[in-house]
Image (cartoon, rainbow, N blue to C red; front, side, top):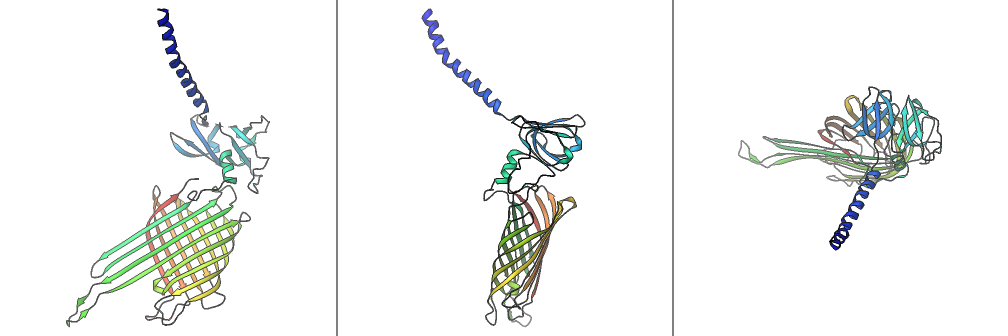
Length: 399
């Protein structure tokens, strides 16, 4: 009986030890789980989740139950965070992508319109009035935005648009228009000065009208005919900021316009830019470049291909209208210095209306004037106007 008891104790020891380790591991991982931040509203309601940021009078908070919310400081009675938060006062300027030593970092408690920071060093920091806090953001996000570099497919924002028209009657007609506009600004948050900006744009329209062959009233055979339209524009630009508003830039651009006999226009250049207006509702940039330009034409009487040295003088404007409507406009004047006749002017306008989630509706125009159109038959018009409409999808990649 004694031997049986000893064998039972020996065999029971291993499962018992395993159970102890298992329970210890559960306890360990439970302790490692981050504690939630807590927000208490003035009406007494309480919400647990994660404090995201506070910019001016607006606080952003995420909860797994209600999702992302935005609320004003005036509606918050208390706020307590478990994560480390940086409080940047209005008098503080962040330069050279470094956090100033005067910026307090630690867990925060908000009450009586005062922000109390509790740093890990246990140093005593005087409470900061909410009205003096310009930006309140977690330390991890601040470090990532100051010194981080997004991956190739990260931090892009923009839209993709497509429209289609089909007609079947005496004449058959179809047309397609589409475009993609992407922009990435680093840092990706509006409360830090930009280091660099990359933009990519592509716009194309293609249409064709065909009329089938037939026998006329005199019994003569009339062959089928068609009329084609084809326009596309593509460009990319990289801006490197040397101040919050002034930057150097490099650009490439490609244009094709069948109606102007322009086979391909290529532009490679560099220059400077300046942000004249920058507010939450609107922004205006002006730019000037020096560039090499190559123009190749087709269906011409004489060889009109050109190698040009010129410039681009342009402006880019964005305006956020009520109900999340977005208006964008780009105007460019492109002269050539070694051939004063070879200049062009273009204007692009777009108006985007939100519809459902990331989908919306866009209307736009593209007006181009090419002064040095080649001699051709039938004669080629210098001006080309295009109106487009289509469904647009908002592109947002995380960082």
